[in-house]
Amino acid sequence: MSKTSKLAEEAVSLLRNLVAIKSYSREEAARCDYLEKYLKEHGQHVHRIGNNLWCEAHKHNAAFPTILLNSHIDTVPASEKWTYEPFVLQEKEFLLPDGNSEKRLYGLGSNDAGAPLTCLIQTYLTLSAQQIPYNLILGLSCEEEVTGKGGIDMLLTELPAIDFALVGEPTSMKAAIAEKGLMVLDCTAHGTTGHAAHNNGDNAIYKAMKAINWLRTTIIDNDPSSPVRPGWNGESILGPVKMTVTIIEGGSKHNVVPDSCRFTVDVRVNDKYENETLFHYIEQQLAGMDCTVQARSFRLSSSGISPQHPAVQRCKSLGLECFGSPTLSDQSRMPFSSIKMGPGDSKRSHTADEYIRPEEIKDGVEGYLRFLEGLTL
Image 1: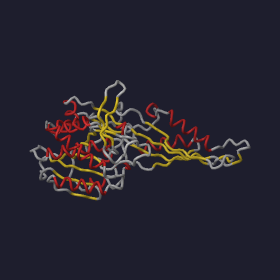
Image 2: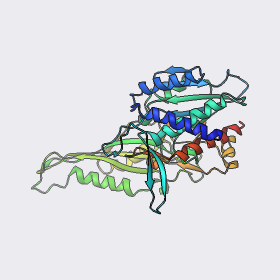
Image 3: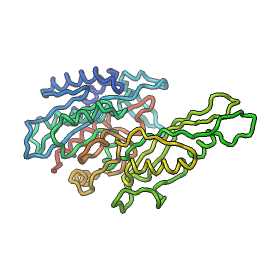
Image 4: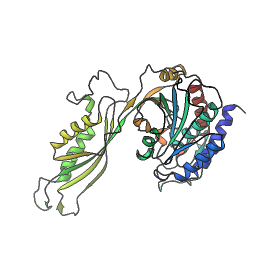
């Protein structure tokens, strides 16, 4: 059996044990306890803050650059639509449309981010037994799925200066060299209450429909009056800003015209815009439709790494596809260069009957080792 096959087997074994431990966001203590014990049993000196863990492969050398391997230990809650037991990693043969079959490992968090997490741990343990030209830190964070301040934000306060991070998320082992930011907007359309039997042109739901249609059809990047980031002069690898209405609530009785209608908008922001200035632009547009807007936060900004960075050049030398990711991760709060990469497919994340294929785990370990063993910063 090859070295990577053995590491993949160990990753699957670890994944099986992790899936069995419920670890919803802000409920990660038991899984954190298990991982702390696991790393100590493998000879690591483990530090813990809250439900975050970190350890360093060798004694810190100030002359070396420092690389962080990061993934998250929490999962989203299991939906009622699971047909398998979500807390048991089950291997099943799945029949493909072409008549062939493939092995799948079903389990909550197996794809997001159990496979990247366990592959990074095996990669770290392997490299910690070697002489490497950089300081290597393994950082396992909690609360990623809710962008909680008790997760990566807390962990980073404990770490030395980081020069580069490899963030483990399901990307089909493609290299995400940029990532969209996120704003969540709570909007209220305002009208005038009245009896539904009478003519009343001030229905808050109709005003909300107008605002929602603007959000649905507008491509902000095509508007020359939009507040482009100072100095911006190119196309975004991340594609255009995407605005999606995800929650709506209005009205109380069938015969009463509502005076308010509330809805929530998920805004995925590319690197062409800064969150706060983009918010004020959207706020101004919706104000003309009797709609007020509040942003929950401006802290989840878009992120990216220079195409000339040695890590990006390493990806290209290995033939890895580089792309801009539409999904958010802990990368958004890292004030240093980073790449997001890992086994699995982000389209499976947060779905019922989430799964990872065993060969993806093997490819993940092998891919991480190839990338890091030849990386020079």
